[in-house]
Image (cartoon, rainbow, N blue to C red):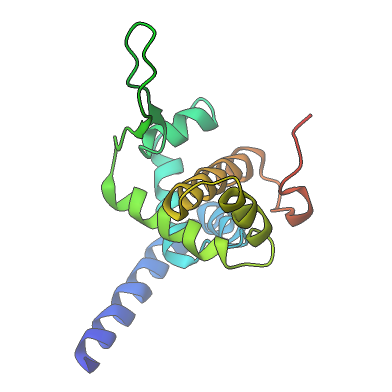
Amino acid sequence: MKSLNTLLAELNNELKRVIAHNDELENKRKQLQRIRGIGFINSAALTHRFDHTPFANSDAVVAAYGLDPRPKDSGTHQGKRRLTKQGNAEDRRLIYLAGQAAAKTKLFKPIYRALLARGLATTEAIVILARKLLRIAFAIWTSGQPFKPDMVGKKPC
């Protein structure tokens, strides 16, 4: 176990070293890490993804992560919506875990509880939080503005 912890520490240090070479990317990564629920690994993964893929809007980001619903409709029949699960499974796992972490924070817990009160399953509520985190992260990335916790839960203009 000690050697595994040493290896993880070495990998984290190497990841930090690679990102630190580019000051602009490092600043953007730090901005993303200020979002409740997003830690170092998630901020690094988001930085890599946003830097290498030009997304048109936040809907494209959600779709690239495979968190968009796929309808199963035919004629008048409305089937159950399921996630498309397109894109990188590891990125999807990381943002889902960020949604789990966010659900425990003072900022996102009321939103999470409101989703549960609407009758959604815990997994559905966490996926909704993960989608919200992706949209917030994309807005911060494109605008360059810092994370504003008081804006969470407010309707956009």
